[in-house]
Amino acid sequence: MKVTEAQLDAAGVDQAWRDYCAHLLIPLNKCRRANSFLPWKCVDERHTYEKCQYDHYLRRVREMTEQHAAAKRAAKAASTPPVDDE
Image (tube, rainbow, N blue to C red):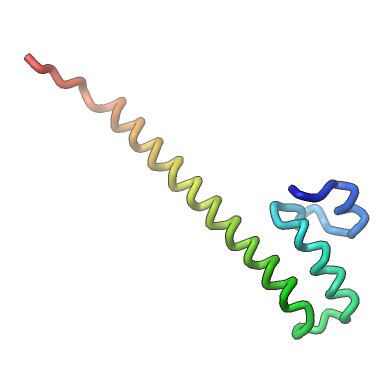
């Protein structure tokens, strides 16, 4: 995370929202409170936060795909008998 626990506490960010993109949630929530949560306000902040969430999701999917592929390769290598060249 790019922000400290103290900064998240001061901004009132709930534990459930403290993730990789929490540093972008602080200015988004500040803008929302300043504009009475009007949906057409804070569009740039919301887009930035949602893009961060999506990119983080893609990163997690890529890591899981790589882990599954590595596990399949390891299982296949363990179950394949060695080839005898004679």
